[in-house]
Image (cartoon, rainbow, N blue to C red):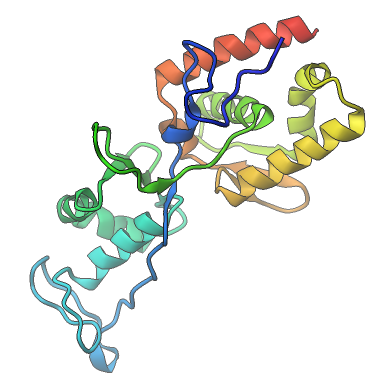
Length: 240
């Protein structure tokens, strides 16, 4: 029995969705964060199209708060209200024009007002170029993300913290699948833990504990989660 492959497009088990396109990504190249002040240190503002110049030779038309929200979204991996309350308010204030500018880059804006997170993804249309940099997920990556999402949805206050040991306990059900040694499994788990921190899905606390990003409530569709959860449950049963 082989693992469901979530690492290459077109190589997934028939009927099993690939989660890579559902994650908040970083468009290639990135965008530098613009200053929120104009010449002389004065804060710039005004409505979109007001022609606020932030530096000599600036040809932009958006006010500084809208530009900052746009830059944070393009830089990725996501924008959260609790981490950047000022930028979050700027996004809500200028959402329409920010959405327009993202569409010019073949990017779709996703805003979850309940979780208070926003991110960009490739526009869901045919014959458009891919812009978002994809994160290749391993078998253990996907298994842990599904578990973290379930914990987040079951949380009464929308906050979940998990330790590396707790993650290892959950993923232990798949240990026999690779046929490797316990040391091999430990190395794979370490790589998964580090990859999810780097991608922003886990936010480090003290020790080996991390907070689960609220964006996991939004980035995976219900159909994707249902299909993958059923497949992973079957594989876990076979591994028992």
